[in-house]
Length: 265
Image 1 (cartoon, helix red, strand yellow):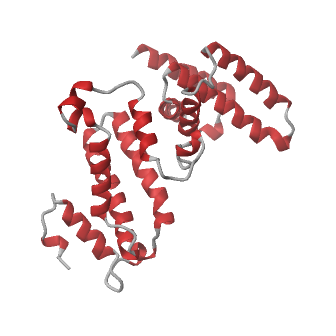
Image 2 (cartoon, rainbow, N blue to C red):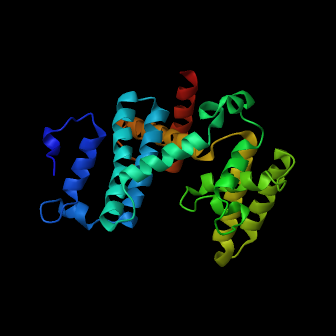
């Protein structure tokens, strides 16, 4: 086995050698040796979110670092797959290269395909062709279950909308939200979670109609809440207090000050 510390740190082969070393019995890392696909999957999702966070903050230094962490994830999964004989990292690369070329005939195809460009419905037809020979599934089966809830809701709604199952206007969805909130208010304890889910699903539908990414919107609001609450804490510190020493009226007044301060910037 090659010594990763003596290899080119800018070469993907070095990262693969590191992962192989970490997963080598006896001499490898005990923690890494204990992992499997299921235990690593949450980290894969987390790293993707951290990439999105760096992009949202416009921090390119962090983005470079987080992309490296994300790149490690397919290396990790491919190493485990190679150990059990399922596939290798080279197979992963081959699969995506083949797919990208196949899905872009207007770029990589012959002269006729390049001139034709991307026809309406091309992507759906291409994916349908790829699924030929596979067991028949419903329209929504291709939407991954592991996606964040709001993102998956939008993708499910988008799929259904393509075959005509959609509200004609966002105004109809606003009415649906009112209906769902009324049902949530009236629900007994056993049904509240389900009714609350219906409210979220309707809100995701509004986001889709307005062209808003609901996950990004919620992340932005989370950051806004964090920023304004920190303002409350800072102002209370100036008064020799902590939030637990304050009351709702005082903190609400400071919250409004935080809003006014942000508007003035």
